[in-house]
Length: 134
Ligand code: AMP
Ligand code: ZN
Image (cartoon, rainbow, N blue to C red; front, top):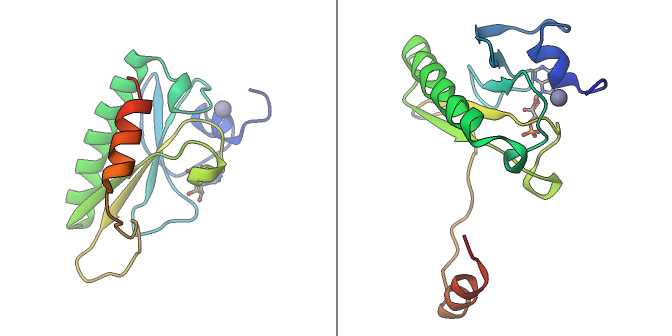
């Protein structure tokens, strides 16, 4: 993808603070971090979102996330880690090249990453179980 910024970063055409690189992925520091150490796992090949990613590459992406997340938590003395992956504008995706966010979390720090829990109603439960076929 000629005009995709994450293609250029993942393949080294645009410099980025790189924590890890292999044949398929680059892990970089996010320029707008939600917490100290917020990083992104980028495949070097262009896939717009989760649904376009081949299963085998997705498996490798998760293994990279595990390795990088573990190193971030240990290296920075974090207390936890959020793994977040957005698909579509409505979900907050702003760069349409698949990526996973690794967000270290620190006890007592107030970064807000989450949602306000609602209640699973009987109506929703029946509707969802009837409509969603996996
Ligand atoms: P998303 O909203 O899931 O599409 O996430 C895109 C992320 O990419 C945001 O957290 C941005 O801060 C980050 N980002 C955008 N451009 C760059 C860049 N050139 N280098 C590093 N991170 C970037
Ligand atoms: Zn791309």
